[in-house]
Image (cartoon, rainbow, N blue to C red; front, side, top):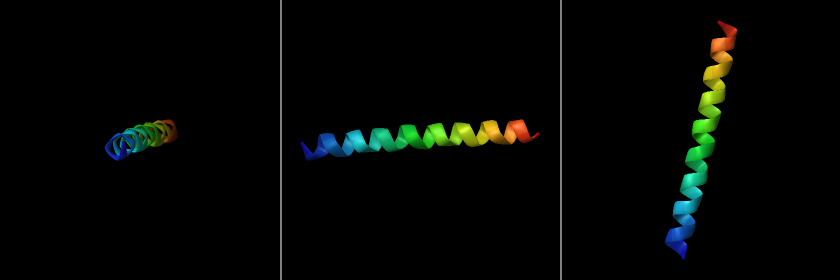
Length: 32
């Protein structure tokens, strides 16, 4: 169960990081 929980948290963290990165790119493009 611990391995499943760790993989699940890693997936959520990765998705949040990618999402925030896309938002930052959108803000920079809007600035230009």
